[in-house]
Length: 353
Image (cartoon, rainbow, N blue to C red; front, top):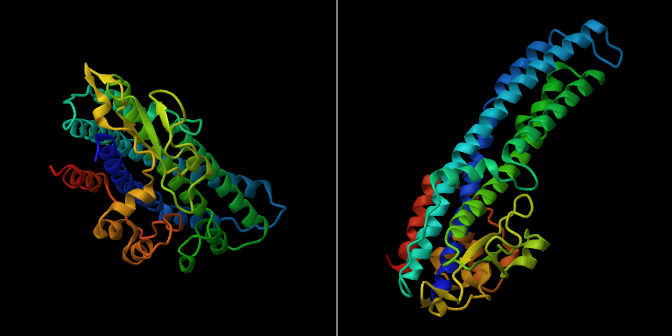
């Protein structure tokens, strides 16, 4: 393989592991949010039991007790979302450093066969700052968490008030808010917040990956000439991501993922075909424009295909079922340490070192 082909091969493998890191991070944050459910249930039970009136016509005293209860709940949930935000930022800052490290080593490794290069690495401060200072989907991370909190506050307030106005019992109102065990609590209004938080975490990780990499690329424009867009093509891939797949954009120009919530696309560095420090870079090879995610997976060993798709799905894939029909439903997830471990294996599998 040419250096540019090696970059793409390693990058797509990294993309697969990155999706599992997203899943692992989502699990951590959702578990944190879920940890407060018992306190919320207890608070609702205690306060609602002291409110005997139900219906549309309530006394001023009852209205005041309801507003006091809702204010207490709002404060609890606001504190919870702040903790979730702090934890998310902590994880993302560490990830930003790892992502830049990965991209730096990737480029330096592939260059060894052509011309030795040493990249200038952005400072830790620069890399960690991308988490909190770079907007995605129009807002900074802190604003997205504030929006999540505000939206949940309205849903909780509405759920409690609707329950009281419709004459529901304390237990019925609690079920309306938290959900039922038999349905794994997916029928409560809290489930909406969990889904939105998961979407936010996925998108924030994608944004961090892009911006951390771009910091490295911008500091080394004499070596890195552009980026190529790579999309995971399956039944969930959006039309804009399909349209961008395989396209090359100059550093600092053109669209960058994420271009929508839950975007799984990524950009990979392209070393170009112009001179680099006096040496012709044509030895890096042209961009492998036909290397889609599906094409990459077809070239992998059976063990890699099984790891990515699962044994049964991988067999169907080898028998000709298009990659577009597959979605990773295995529920596999990685922590940042596990992501680092899997990324470390890439050097051996791609470069033999």
